[in-house]
View 1 (cartoon, rainbow, N blue to C red):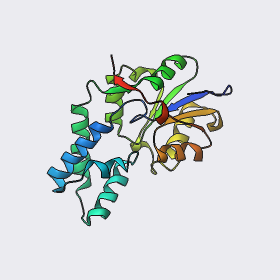
View 2: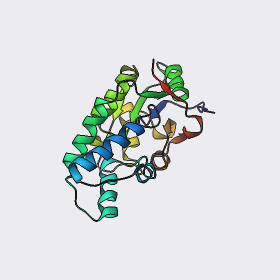
View 3: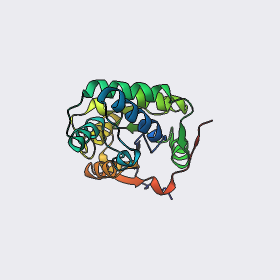
View 4: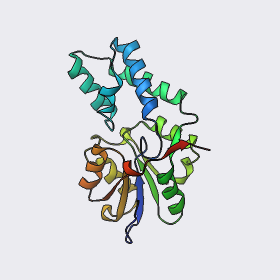
Length: 199
């Protein structure tokens, strides 16, 4: 059950896994990029344990786990390209999208994602919500990714809203920790996930 406190002045949404189900797309894209560029095979279970990791965090963990040094820029570029190529028809999280539609125009809405701007914007465009959000903050905009609070604090600053009056919607441990560290109310959307193909 999603509840919005009475003193809420802005809503901020994570993207991957919260608004849209891009995680299966990322899984296949990361596996293919690591195989073709890095020459290694990484199984699905390994990735699922690291849901919510930013790109550099994930690749640092790959290097540590496999004892190798990767061409990170090439792997990131290949992964993003593959996700964009498969983004059409991505599934959206119906309960969370319902909140977006109900609150659009009532309070400012933002997206704060550890994903890249190119993929986040493509994802939002695929589900017809790109123009709903007045602020979009991505991994390129901050020095420290989630679980640091930077991305959420920047979103609140761009919205012109005190963090204490922001409600964040998240699907990962790192993201929830980041939102709470920013002094925001954090809603864990995992219990109410209902992904369906966007119409």
